[in-house]
Length: 479
Image (cartoon, rainbow, N blue to C red):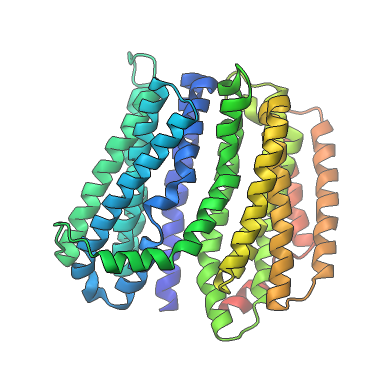
């Protein structure tokens, strides 16, 4: 069973690493360069508005469905119609709330039409996640992995034609939205075909009000947490676009450009937390020692996050000008402050996952409320003065504060050792890494070579500080 799990896990990671970077750097980045920072900034603000209310589309139904079907595969036929109907109702509620919020925020008619397309994208994406949950619950992990990138593969093909085919007219952001709607719809049809072939389920709606309402009621703490986290992680782009003055759309585009690279880093953190959650859950249920896996996770994620942050600090302007058009030193500073959030996000992926596995959802909701208050209050103060740069600074303050809270409450709830030696080692690592970055930035060579040299120094320091060793990984896997 362990070999089966590891083989499928590696397959999932490999598939995602092959496809998603192509989507981010070949398609999404090129779209921003073609439509301009103002056009893309408006699009990203609308996307983030949809993401804030995204929990309405699910409300814990996907998790519940996976839990039930994986334990009793025979229930798929009876449960699928009710779940499908519930999701269609939630999609309608979601559309009403998001569009009403957009209207209250004062978006124009054209922007509201764009928001309708984004609502369709988010609804289809949520439906796709539900369909995949049935396939993964039946242990068809490789099929699930392929379906997880089907929409992206289709979008890469379609958008590549629209972006690079000779003689095509100027690319419009509306094309980008319509292409995503069409590709998600095609991927859903494919997923429905495989579910029908595997389990012969019925697609006729059958809504069990009592059962679904019970599931939703149990999922309220989880839904609240996801909503609060979405607010303090995604509201910034909307605020930049709305309150930055006449150039708000352009500043929102600059912010989105820097945030895209942070999202690439977070992609690996999310994969990591997905592996940690069941491992923490099993160790806690067996009253095992969680500290070795926490220490190993910190020693893997944090040094890599520090290297990425240092690259943004010392070479941020060069990176932004290399990837995007019309970028300057201001965009480099925005990018540096955003990437400074990456270590805090890594801490969240470890310690908030630990608190989740321990069942401390009420505590996590309180921490998330603190994050919302800090983020919104500081953004309303700094964005009118510093625009995207102010929002990036607020993101750093918010996520760093929450990271310390996650560490503090994890130690308190689970009686973990303070780890003074571990803290001192990481502080020493950051000091030497910063020195290496500064010296590399002073070299009179092409910036990309200097950055690669800096990255090599960071990797060497990881082994010198013995954050990762082959023997520790082998010992953990043996257990």
